Image 1 (cartoon, protein in one colour):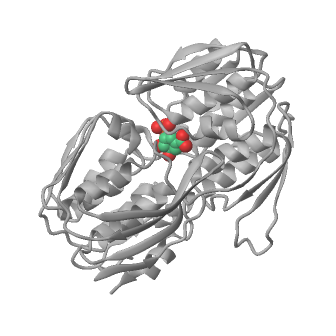
Image 2 (cartoon, rainbow, N blue to C red; image 1 turned 135 degrees about the vertical axis):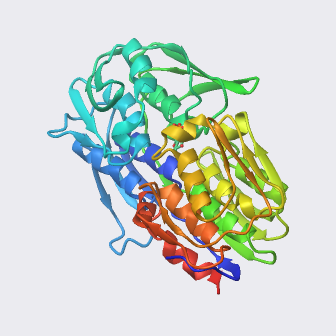
Length: 431
Ligand code: S3P
């Protein structure tokens, strides 16, 4: 139950970025020597990745017993993993299934991968097609999980990705590491580059070249990785909920230390500034190739935004919360070219439109996006998270400016990426 608020004020320390946590856990497992990962994501998705790595013979432990620093120590076992005695359970995590596919496809054994009801509906052909071309044998249920992957000695591939997806790109780079020869991957639109940055951090060599709005990566197989010690920057996609909450209140003030500032993720900050949030960044530093900084934000007027083309790919995880606050802006938001939102943990276009309408908003739902006029007054309502963490959190934010209380059913889904979300939101809201 979320009650309306008067203001947002305070400081938020965020758990480690989910995208980076997954990749570090996987690469630490196939590196040589130990890795120490501080501020590992507290989300259930990243725990799914760790559990799968354990099933594949990787030893790891949480080194801080009170759990406060969320430090994971991983003993890398090199590129060869051990067969799991049971199916690899990826839970709700598309990142776990798609990226780990690339690693198990290059092993000398067969693996089964399963997921929950939501993951079992998500498209896997995007990884099955290129991994099969590299020599793996993959059986699926009509292109969806469960997957049965018979590993092989992979061959390098020259591949242009038809869908802009960082999960697919990382999957193929991980497979490329285990393949004979040089792999070349081209992406039509630039997506988050944590896979490339992490591979370099663990000692791999790869070449990157931008081509127009896209990107080309070349990497040779057979490279050995070595473990790292890292502090994972705060999750920028989790920060989005607090930034949008702050944006709702003129005069709000929020600081977020140790936040991920990777340019392939930070488009959100440009859009929020354009809409009217005042943002300043200090203490910029680079840790293992990832840019990190401290953010100070101050609420002002909220105008409008159009999100389309490359921006839709760059903001794919933040569109639900931007859309959820759109009715409170002066002119609202238009989102185009975002049909990928329909195949996330839920159909996020439909979920946003339905919940906003339940709160009394006028919304135009389109196949590839939404148009939401501004200047609207919303009322509290009974909403559904659709078992989707980002929908649960987006509507907790929208509810702060509604008239009356909002009940979000299935709000516990927030734990997929951010178990402490509701508690932290409560700490920074003034009533
Ligand atoms: C992610 C990429 C995005 C994003 C997901 C995390 C990643 O998915 O939605 O939450 O870590 O690479 P796609 O690659 O399918 O767009």
